[in-house]
Length: 434
Image (tube, rainbow, N blue to C red):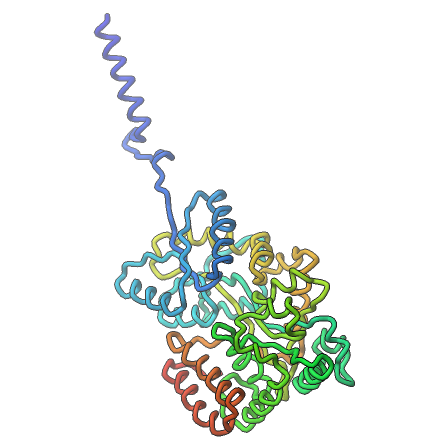
């Protein structure tokens, strides 16, 4: 009797063991306790400054892991290093990158090299992407990236400066970006401010790490010539450089040391400034009642300005594509987009998020950006996708500025020398000259 019970006990134990191991009737199942912990590699040229990186790692990715259980290795990287690594991995077939974040131009270039997956068949519920961003994200019928963040560059005005507007220009003209708000009006306004205060009150981020080159190729060049580079050495360009040389006598000379305009605005060193929205955000947050954000002036060809779009893309043969898509889904949710705006000053790409922007400093930013985007005379510029030659492109504009504006060289001579060099960059990369 005892022997029969012992055999039955053994049989039960065997059956229990089979159930636990998932091997019943020849079918193998996986126990939840054996699920492998996935870590995805996200390489990004965006949100790389220390405070922005901390926001990504300590808030965004922590919340994402809490919701999904997925770890993310966030790797801040320069564009050139990203391009080099992505190319090496795609060529060897040993892809370790699961997700990349970059500006439109860089992602456009990566796509031209066949390094990115087509995301056309994927959907994201509960969000409507702004049509302009959707348009740029789809290249040759292929959904190259998902629009993630947007930004632009604007003018910031200390409200006290409105007391010194030139004749015929009203505060409403400046706030709404009417035809009267042009570069000639800016010159007269800057002149009035200097005469009234005894100091130049206009500022630009012309320091070593400042973004003056974006103003040159994406703002004042399109405004005067209609193009970023196509008419670099045209008579209209010479007119523009002469104008900028005249304007510079009303620009605070410390501009050549400033990399961002937020602090100079807060310190009262300037009353008018141009910069990236993310780089003036601290001034607006500190004194939202003191500053307003307004559209940039227009020129003879229209109101040139850059539309900055950062996107999220999945490399070809990425090892964890499903998990990367879950991260894209999280990063583009309206509530996440508002968080990004609140913390780092980049604007949403989905319509559902725009209605959730709270009043206060962010409203000041949003109103200025919206007013600029809505101007009927807009000449929209995208940052060119020149790959590894992008640095040469921007260096040429900074060189022209230094030689013409700071050193007083003849503008016609300088643009005739640099123009062919700039155009050759686009030809070498097989790109249309913008």
